[in-house]
Image (cartoon, rainbow, N blue to C red; front, top):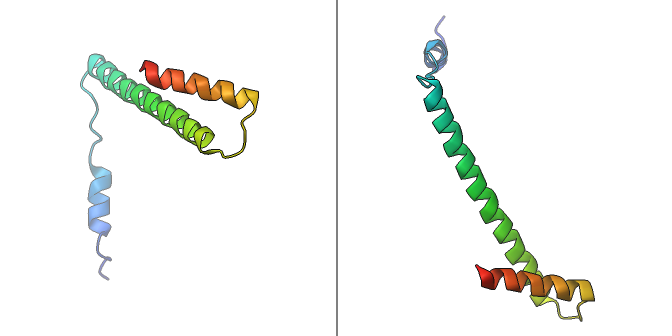
Length: 82
């Protein structure tokens, strides 16, 4: 009985050794680079969320509460400071 296509490829893939970094220093470098990427990603997401919040506050047609006005002014100040 013939095996379905892909069975041999799946078996061969399962038998391959997983490549590991050669040393602790390489693992540390890889971790640091991943961490830096995550930090930049988080900073960009945070900035984007603030921009969306400011857009929603500016788009409101009804009058804003004191808290919303304070938040709007704070967000505008932060955007202009950058």
